[in-house]
Image 1: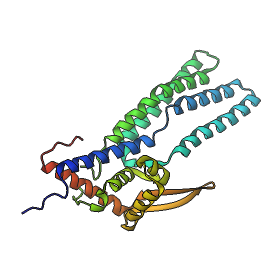
Image 2 (image 1 turned 90 degrees about the vertical axis):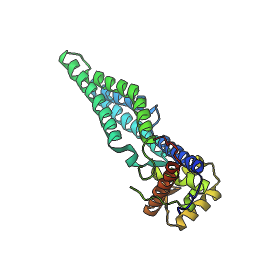
Image 3 (image 1 turned 120 degrees about the vertical axis):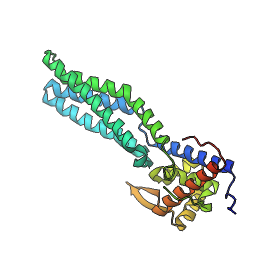
Image 4 (image 1 turned 60 degrees about the vertical axis):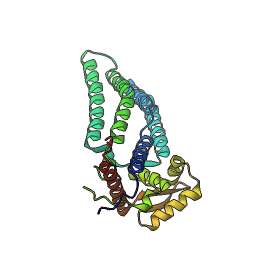
Amino acid sequence: MSEPPAVSPSAAADALAEIRARQAQAVDATLVPNTFWPTVGGLMVAFTAAVETGRPWLLAVGTVAFVVGLTAVVGRVLMRHRAQVRTSLIGVRGGAVIAGHVFVTLALGLGTGYAAESAGFGWPATLGTTVTAVAMTATGPWVMRHLRDMMAGRPIGGGR
Amino acid sequence: MTAPRFDELIHAPTRLSLVSLLAATEWAEFRYLREQLGMSDSALSKQLATLEQAGYLEVSKSFVGKRPRTSVRLSRDGRRAFDGHVAALQEIVAQAGARLLP
């Protein structure tokens, strides 16, 4: 004769729901805030513009501002980062989404920059970086939401 | 496939929430766990001590600048125990004919 279960089926279902909710909670804690994208994008555009002026003093100021700004933005994210989600939750699909996002935004920017240069536009790199920054701002939060849903929906426990 | 193994230690409500959070992370700070679970320092410390004594947790203390930081992660045994417990819960639900959403 088989043993009765340690808990009732409804209690087991409640426990699984709690586990699922905590998994989603952990995922939420590790995503970058939406302000990250326009801030980094803005820093990139300002730095590129400083380089493209060709003026040494502007390049120096722009470089320092870029480094300080980026350090502050990334530092703020890291300081708030009080848990690290399991990389297995990101998985191959999540990695592909991240890589695809980087590739597309970079390709848009580079393509725009080269096209602008061919067309004789005076600030091709700044234009290209602006396109990248706008693409990051527009799609970054969507990518984060997609990753969140993907990670929160991964199998719990041993993967059944 | 993980063998189902119901774990009474993990199943206690507060510890289930705690272990579930840790199972989804590589590591988590003490403060993060306290805030997410809505527990006091002493209550959380007690639960962590219980799980650490069972070999399910690893607790490490470090400094970020001058700020002390306590990080917690599930040990290999803890992860195995959690996976077995989840498998056991899923088996209970499946045997009852209940549908579990993926």
